[in-house]
Image (cartoon, rainbow, N blue to C red):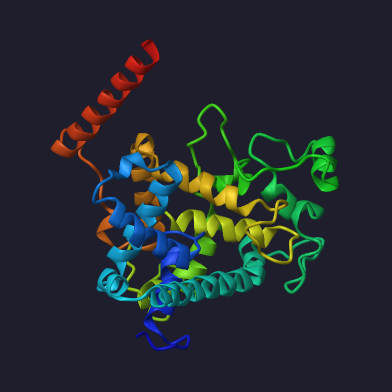
Length: 330
């Protein structure tokens, strides 16, 4: 029988890190219950026969199992009550991490966006968000969807009044390097803004590493969890936190249709996990590791043009393209 545990339980700490680096949006008791049940069903059924949503949930479940040694045995040997308890502990950690980061970035994001050597005008308060979002010229310009012109008075008024509703998959310009999006090449500069790197370092390596290379990071979340490279999901996690910090919304909620954070997070994660985008994603991860973990091997890794790995990737793309063509033709 699992003993009722406090926040010091290792599963709570693991929930902190897992939600930041692997998957942010999760009902852990349901994830574990469904995952164990699905493992039994997969003795007679292929994973490909489940729905897309079930397949994604199972991938997250497997990532959770792989990241915590002994967890599968613990779940298989435990009762239904124990499985739910484990899920609640991990979920407590995940919610705690999100809440802590939301609170921290509420103030820290102002330091990240302040013009160098200048104060934000009109002033933005660290403890109140009522004047943020499209209500302020600076936060509004950063949240303005890529492809729209914040300097256009009508666009600005429509965004401020709410007449123009911004969906989660309408990505804000702050995601782009130098806050410039080339709609002819939308990958160019995507997820490479200084603001994102600033927030990432603040959460993962330590606030003191924001303005310099993260050498002394022993107190940072990355060091505490043995993290020495950027994960795919950690980028949408930070982007979601920054987007909320810039907004005028006071309470973070996945079901909030105004911020539409769930759609925003999933739209970014779906792109980064799309096998067809592997080349751009690989280059993006190398870039990120150079910013955050410059001494890691991940910051230096680059696939050689004539390597076996490169040829395998090229062959897979050609095969997928041929398959898609045949499906369309038929």
